[in-house]
Amino acid sequence: MNKSRRGISLFLRTRLFSTNPVSNLKVVDGFIGAIGNTPLIRLNNASRETGTEIFAKAEFMNPGGSVKDRAALYVVKDAEERGLLKPGGTVVEGTAGNTGIGLAHVCRAKGYKCVIYMPDTQSQEKINLLRMLGAEVYPVPAVAYENPDNYNHQAARHAQNTPNAVWTYQFDNIANRRAHYETTGPEIWDQTNGEVDGFTCSTGTGGTLAGVTRFLKEKNPKIKSFLADPPGSVLFSYFKSGGKLIERTGSSITEGIGQGRITSNLQPDVDIIDDALQVPDEKSIEMVYRLLDEEGLYMGASTALNVVAAVEMAKILGPDGLNDENWICLNLVVKRVPIGPDTDCRTLCS
Picture 1: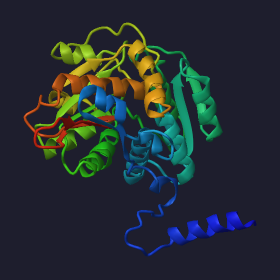
Picture 2 (picture 1 turned 135 degrees about the horizontal axis):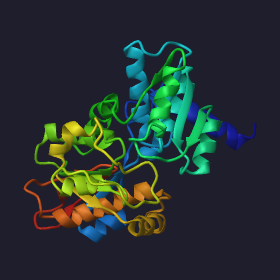
Picture 3 (picture 1 turned 90 degrees about the vertical axis):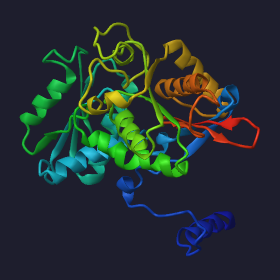
């Protein structure tokens, strides 16, 4: 080993096992232990544009690459705790988003088989990644939830016909929302020292939006929560119409977000969501390039949609638009805090 490599190796070992109390490095227990505790990233240009400070909660830093690692872990733990999943068993899920990736990782780490049903509209890259992670993947025709051949119903039948298998059913399994009530929400509260005024994110299952919103509003009822929705989803119109579900029309380039019904994860907290924003694909695409050009962050369309919603939320509420002094939003989090006696305020978005 050359001198420079030996020096790097020694530095890493010294820091890793350091007893210095100011060291913030720590060892976690495998893939499972690395889930959560993601940082907040300040979005500099979005902050300047709105006269606030906007931060993003960096869920891409979960070991599986998305916020869905949290829900994946919780639905598997829930099945274990209820005795539905025994060693060597099979986890079956229907997913059009990143939950499948999170589940494939969690199952691999825990020694379970993983079977994923998904609409055949999903990217080939996602299918290839799932198979590389060891999942058995079944792309099926995209049909409405009411159709017995919907990917969720096919997943349910697969689990029923497989010994020692469980259908984790992320959409209506409230272990999903509990993951965010017990981890994501508290992290945001702690990272902002409780100075939270607003929260926004897109939703598919409703788990992130509902769990984080419930936790934050229990801490401070003045906190605002906005739903961010893509075209082709019924959630925006549901909130804007006072609770009327209309037929799903249109489509979006975003994957894994948007919904055609109100899930069991979202239903209990519909009344505490303050508003909804619909983000056209054009704005999401533009924000993908803006995040790369202005922030150096290479993000996908659903993340970009969340950033657009956070900027809109910041403009709607404004630096002086709240009764409290601080505000935040998730997956985009917005936080407004005074930076001086007669100066503007900051906004945070994660």
